[in-house]
Amino acid sequence: MNYRIVNINAGSPTADANVLIIYTGGTIGMITDDSGSLISFNFKNIIEKIPVLKSLNTRITVISFPEPIDSSDVNLNHWVDIGYIIYENYNQYDGFVVLHGTDTMAYSASALSFILEGLSKPVIFTGAQLPIGATRSDARENLITALEIATTRLEGKPVVPEVCIYFNNHLLRGNRAKKAESIHFDAFESENYPPLAEAGVVIDYNLASIIERTDGQKLKFNHKLDSNVAILKLFPGMSRTVVESILNISGLKGVVMETYGSGNATTEKWFLECLEEAISKGIIVLNVSQCTGGRVLQGRYETSRMLPRLGVLSGSDLTTEAAITKMMVLLGTESDPGKVKERLVKPICGEMS
Ligand code: ASP
Image (cartoon, rainbow, N blue to C red; front, side, top):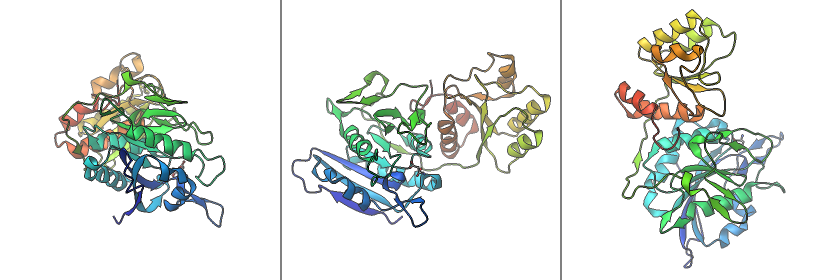
């Protein structure tokens, strides 16, 4: 990719931190086109609207996607590109801020948490609900605070050595977050894990909930992702044809099955037979709940008791975003399906309890 690189405060002798911003697009930098729709625009637009960036006590480098995107267009190549930029520049910067559209930010932050295995520096995703040019935009606060979080250290170490989403005064673990709101400013929630920080007059870090950085930990760049996966969302009245069509997709290796409540599903014979057949062909089925809070407990009800017997794995309190991206990374990284199954049900970077 032909990235655009911009340096801000490059020569500042007093700057005490170095941060790399990766600009992928999203509402934050958008402008309105002739037909009235919001379209992505270049990063210059952002710097002009936030002149204070130039006077921060931080050396900032910006790497921009050559063609900034609406995050609904994000794909596996973009995730690998973001991971590669961070991996290649890892030693030069104290932290990283990824400017990204909110629509798929929870997927991208989850994916990057698995792609950058053994991360020990902050990678903070942020964006905005209103473009930077709008008078009431939330972009300025989100970006300035994300930069501060990305460079904050305690006893010489980064306070937040993990992939996070900062939005509307809350810092959330990236692979625990979900987009929950498309109009109000509080776009993200994390029902199953507490915020890692809250920003008010000061930024109040919830140190007990932040991943502990292990000294000497080496960063691994898991750049192979397998897209032979699907999400099967159950609904009452779902037909056999729909279930069979999904489970018979050619080359399919893994399915995230979104069930009801604490992991319950219809007990109809045909449905269980479809699952059994898929699993016997080697397809991995991971059970996550349609609820935003709570967790899968297979066997709590009669309507989930048969699932572990068929070989359905429990995704505990994984979000769908974390489950599908974890599956893509593990299927791409591990050659042994047994190892994929073993790692799917255990936490890798705080994504599940
Ligand atoms: N459609 C936009 C995007 O995800 C929405 C946003 O940025 O908030 O890129």
